[in-house]
Length: 232
Image (tube, rainbow, N blue to C red):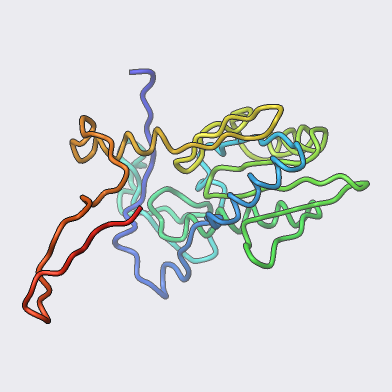
């Protein structure tokens, strides 16, 4: 046990759509956008950095009128029946992911970033001919481009939000990434091992194809067996 953590979480299941919340979504970049940025970084020789936003969902501002019961230990004498009106997002609220996206989107656009037409979670900016690209995936950010712009952006983000600098990108959405001078090496070994362990198949043998070669099956429409040889 490294530390104890405690959060004030709302009971979002009791919220009513159209009254307590409107839209519910989280900022998730397209997988194709992430792969494209990896390929572009390898071609341009850019390093890819990663940052994590601590308590991201607490940064949003509530647009709706939402009330919650007072948490235990914070009751006020002679005001036991009073409730609290939320001004900021809390974990458990259905609109919390949307509020976080609105906050971070306003921050980036206010700094002059433009969003990709193909992916609204991909931001880019050009400063004196130098590029900086940021990909947003809920509370994770990957940054690539000019090193000086990356360092400056990290400092600005740390002053606005509570951030954790993870350094060079190594593991992201099931992808293991090793950055070398000659390019990138991408693997899904850890993800594959976790899937095998989940289904108790970590001791299985390796084969070229998931289907056996030269097996025969019965064709239900013709009432006879047909050859279903697998060609590699």
